[in-house]
Length: 192
Image (cartoon, rainbow, N blue to C red; front, side, top):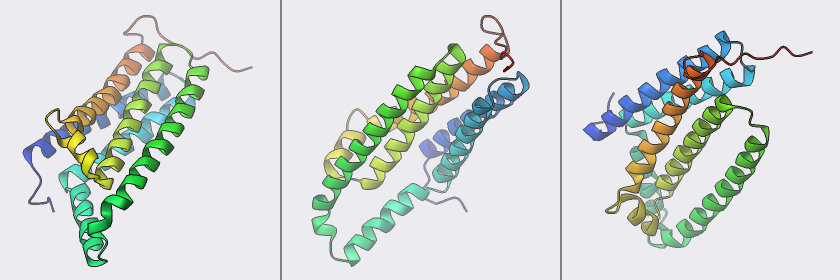
């Protein structure tokens, strides 16, 4: 059942995510049909599945329900007043861990990148990583962080929509490249 607190903006975001799912599925099928590296099709399929999960999270307002449940549990255990002492180390840990993992992953990806299709794929992966980091930071719900995310610049929505558009745009560009609609057709060379 759809949550009664689901807003029109959440439905709009879910619709955007559904378009991203479709774009990623088309990219996965294109990678497979145009005999691209098998890992490309798998990555696009994983990105499509990730955005299916995001559609469900948005429509059923699961993220907000989970955040409310965490607040309720911290109140019951009488640590709610001391939550900032817990949230700061968690926030720093999230930023450091995700930052290090992102740096290592981007460095590795850049070394292996060959051609525009790989750039489109890596761009989409970066968008998905940004979305995942945003979700984790929203769950931590640190007061200072909340002011940045939900403040006058609405960075929450800017990063959310930007990440979704980066993934969807990467899928569209990838599809156009491998189908030969954007420059010359990319044919995978047979392995020897």
